[in-house]
Amino acid sequence: MTDATRALPGSSSRHGMVICQPASASWWAAAAVLAIILVLPLFVVELPPVLDYPNHLARMKILAEGPANPIMSRIYAIDWGLIPNIAIDLIMPPMLKVMPLFTAGKIMLAVTVLLPVLGAVLFSRALFGHWSFWSLGCGLVAYNGITLLGFMNFQIGLGLALVVAAGWIEFRDRAPVATVLGCALGAVLLFFLHVFAVLFLAVLLGSHELMQLYDGWRSGKPVRPALVRSATMLGCVFVLPVVFYAMSALSGNAPEARWRSLGRKSYGLFLPFLNYRVNLDLGTGFLIGAGILFSWWRGWMRVPLSTVIAMVVLSVAYVLSPFSLKGASFVDLRMPAMMGFLLFAGMAPVAIPRRVAQVGGLGLGALFAVRMAVLVLVWIGSQADVARVRQAIAPVQPGSKVLLTISDWEDNPAYWRKGMERSRRVTKLASTFIHLAALLTIERNAFWPLLFAEPAKQPIQARIPYQDLSIPEGWPPSYELLDKERPDEVMDPDDLEEAPYLNRWDRKYDYVLILNAGGVPDLRQVAPTKLELINANDMAALFRVRHPWTAQHSSREDLLSRTAGRS
Image (cartoon, rainbow, N blue to C red; front, side):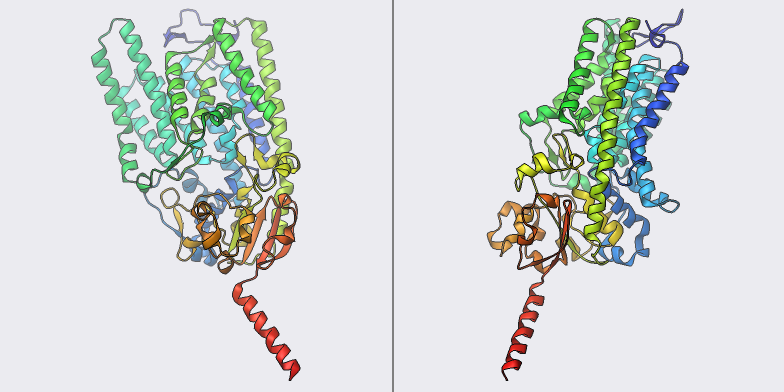
């Protein structure tokens, strides 16, 4: 038995576990090394290839500058209200008064990576009564698929939910009133960080209370008084978030949902391990899962009933949840992200032979090092794409309106399979380059149609007439749609439904930007009567729009000069 699992003589038990020795110097050293390695990738690149991250940065710029930026304040209005999911909106704008935007952004990214790890470690400590090396293994899932999609508010909320749940487990019986008050305050804070964080906290606290009730029933204690007490305590914790949600604009959003097939959901179970190399990612998931099952079978892994309940609830929720709901995407994939951290926070090795523990620890450390090396190399390579986008958009003038399109999978599957940079896609999830167009707002003070500006979820919204030129949350249309002569008549209704601003786009925008431009066979053949190619590279192509009235004016001038020549 290792030092981390050896019981102190005469120590009492906690939830069936023994309270063990304080963390050793080696544990603290391992924790420090883990934290340093996790934040290292963030500071070796200027703009990490995290999907939503540039879009968030653009919004932070608008919030921080406010009326001081006459161009952006003419396009967007700042409107604070009872809005969930605004963690970074509250924290980052004040930071920009003392540091550059990209520096503040990377500090917040570090928080989104480290806080869930800290929460998992504290949760494990509260549940098992000792600092476990196994809990540090959550570094393997720190850069999970959700992290690389840039769901920063969700990640911060997930980490804080684990911290609040750790406090509940630690102090519930010793100071119940203070625990309820503290967790109620935490639940309110979680509401403003992310709604799903409140749901995660409910799962964690609810599963712990069910375990407590089961233990009491087995020991012969009356169940009804304990049930009433648990229900009352939980009700006090969650009543305000429920009321706030009912009062928020988000509750009034149309409950439109889109579902994924069960076959596609199978990949989602590996989300905690997904980043850039499919074989390594899936292999890591299989290895961790098989290791846990084998250790449990041999009696080397302690899995409390509360963890089993939470895992079952999250698994069922994952199967039943839609992919998108109320304007939010990747809804179902939030559950595997939560489960990934519980693999390390809600379980603890016990009585593992020293040699097995040493080999297993070295193996996990080596796997972690390989995965982090892959991530760092991919991120370093991604900076070439950032430079290409900057080069392409350099001619854009402040205040211009830029239509964003992409070369999608259906447009050129061969390019996506072979020619595309690895950093442009997270394994089995999504492309990561879409929101690089936010550099138009950050560096060119220009408008583009997909800035996150949903009033129910963000404290900004587009002003009239820019509302008709944008969708606060959406996906860029294919560049092939630009060739339609009359979009309002011949374009597929589904295309116009997802991007209504395409209707008569050549009358609305000053420029067109195509991302992943290397997938376009011939850029000069993209709507040649409407577009003039200005800049192009493998990542981005910028076109100037030939406005109809400009073309008519030019034609009239040509006719007049020819007439004058005859006379």
